[in-house]
Amino acid sequence: QSQMAAIFKNKKINLIPETYYFKPDSRPKVSIGIPALNEEANIGRILEDLLAQDQQEIDIKTILVYSDGSTDSTNKIVASFSHSHPVIKLIASKIRHGLAYGQNIIYKNAKSDYLVVIQADTRVKDPQFIKKLIAPLLSNLSDMAAAMIVPVKPLNKLDGALKLSMALKETLFTSFNRGNNIYTCHGPARAYSKKMYKSFQFDYDIGEDAFSYLKCISSGYRYTYVPQARIYFRLPTSLAEHVKQSLRFHHMRKTLSQNFSSDLINKEMTIPLRIMASSALKGFRLILNQPLEFVLYLCFSFLTFIISFFVPSQTHKWDMITSSKRLE
Image 1: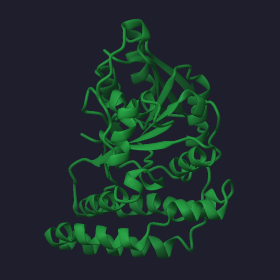
Image 2: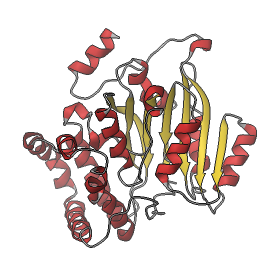
Image 3: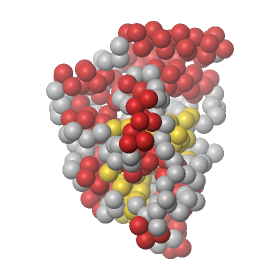
Image 4: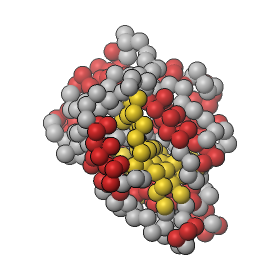
């Protein structure tokens, strides 16, 4: 463990040890939770991805899907998988309660040493994904970890502009505290130690990823960003849905202030100017290669910022976007 700790300490970006050796009966037990709402376009694919994970050194005991009042074929698809793969369990609610409620149900029903929560509208291409994501937890270097999120190929200029912004943000966020910060605690895939996921519940949907990070830090737990574990998702392809998604971020600080002090929020969300300047220089080449997409993104950002002053904050059961649910 001391060698692994040295790796984390000496690298600007986390380098996670990827090789462990466990006897078959002593492999770490992992539960996977998937909150889902009308995910018929992708739920079968992400289940196939997870069933294909390498389990030589980990033991995936349960893949628990919580369906939050789905009205499409989500429940039917998951049930068909569970017939041939008993590791897959379905909890289906008849009404929609919201993401926070669904994640709390997953936390309550998980029994394993480690819990990985993955969004249903994502894909995992690496069979080592789960092992890489929980590596810092196995090394006892962390209590929570988040994967790197990677947008799939854009379908139009809008999500092309958003993909450029993601690349610029990745440069910025991974330069801040070696990547271990609130901005890399992405919603699509996070892993928790048992002592952490059994110690708290989500109170609201808006900013639930940032909530988990602040809860981790304020409770004395440790967080690690794992760029080696990559999960794929689709950005919104319509302006209206981009605005919906962006409004959640603009209202996030207000929502988080219900549970955390302003001093803690400001400390964790304020990036030093020197890091911002350095990241801007690194991203300049990307901007030169895609000037139209950059201008479009600036326009979209200004628009959502203005709209945020006129749209009330949501805390539960936010408006869903649908264009990101179909990855293929």
